[in-house]
Amino acid sequence: MKKTASNDDILYERKIEIGKKKLHYLKPSIQKKNISNLSIQEQVKFIEYGIAPLVPPKHKNILEAFEYWVSKTPKATAAIHLNNTISYKELDNQATILALLLKQKGISSGDSIGLYMHRSLDMLIGIIACLKLGAIYVPQDPRIVPKSMLNSIYKLSNSSIIISHSDYQNQELFQEQIEVVFIDKELSKDIHQRLYGSVKLINQKGNTPDSVCFVLFTSGTTGIPNGVQVTHKNLCNILYTTPGNLNIKPGTKVAQILNISFDMAAWEILGCLGNGGTLLIRGKSIQDTAQKANVIIATPTVLTTIDLNKCKSIETVAVAGEPCPEILANKWAKVCDFYNSCGPTETTIVNTMKKCGLKNKELSIGKPTPNNTVYILNEKQEPCKIGEVGIMWAGGNCVTKGYINNGELNKKRYANDPFLNNGDLMFNTGDLGKWNSEGELIHYGRVDDQVKIKGFRVELDAISKIIERTTDVKRAVTLKHQNFLVSFISGRFKNKSKVLETLKNNISKELPYYYLPTEFIFMEELPKTSRGKINKSELKEFLI
Image (cartoon, rainbow, N blue to C red; front, side, top):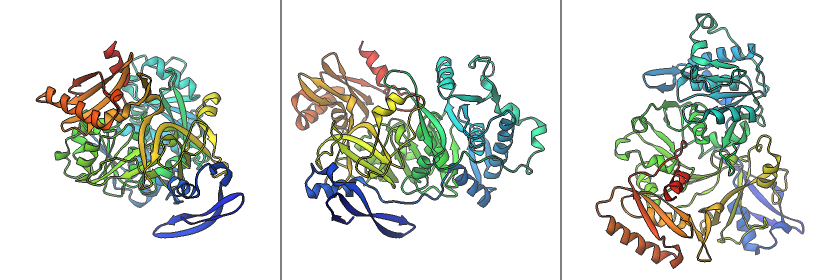
């Protein structure tokens, strides 16, 4: 990246990548006054490290990406679930029928639809049908979400109707005044089958790049769900550029193992169907699906449950959602392309990625993905010095449209980007990080995970990282309880006393004395949330 200077701006040439060609254009972007606390060398690195190249995505909306493959490979298998398969053309036909049924019920572009489904081919039909209407789908799994939460999400998302499965018809999950379409019942009616091959569509006004594609609900720090509005532009930016496309192409088998309400499930589903791959939707066994797949997307906790030795077809693995143990990354990087990634729901699945080498001593989360930015800022939103730990603010095409009906929280977490000063927003991820000497991001956990012990500030993830380097340790998490630290460790250990001695020595060598946990609790498996992350809330209850 080249730089020249003027009185008001730093002008620099930002790369535009189109295919194999790299073009350049000059754009006065970075406001010099806003990074004046940095040295000239650090100002250059602030730009070079934090602002990714511009790379036009292959598609501008998700439906366009799917329909491209319907036209190009209509007979190719789009998805397999248990013993059932569906081709791209069959999926398109079924989704078109459902879309017409929804249209008859008054659903149109911009409406929200509750998609309360479990993993199945019907789930895919529901997603594509919503996209064909230009509608917004709100995914939830009724098996794991309480009835009260489902109804709250329905109201908060301003949904007009619910698509579900007849498995839930007699479970009293839905309030009487809510209209529910049971997808499997409707599509089994003979009258609808006569529409095959004769239906052309419909209404795509809702599929502009800035249109909301789906709304994902996070738990929120108060326990009240927060609905994040994710646009087509947000999604296309990660799913249809490199490396976020994970080299998925026709013939690539992608494991679909995550919960539909988890943003990484959209990486599996829409990333696969928009790149022409075949989705392997799991049943009860994650392992059975994983060992047939070429691509696996998972949290590190889920990945630790998969036997690598049985995954003979694996080509690419991407993890995100929580810190990844270095041992886990090193093990998988020996046999496939392994990406360590990071990003909250509000920055669209992930906004940084790192293709890991065979031996990672300090595992980074890489660099901002195309068309995105990452700034390391202090509490006053001023740039930190290169190598200094601060809060990661994410900007660019990854930044979502904000929370539904929560202007107060939007003001706290979203802000205008004062550095590019182009009208774009940036988002406070709540993650701590720094730039290393290679211009990659080192993750230091959540701001919320910084605690005070004996008057000293302690970063809990720093302890867990060291524990996870130990042989036979699968996962570890450290929590503050009262005024001391407790580390929970999963794995199978023949001699726990010896392991405990090793852990204490390793922590004492690398960290100050006040970082040493008072207690170590060994478990065969750490409890998981429905999204496949370590369940810290359940562990805290264990201590009460």
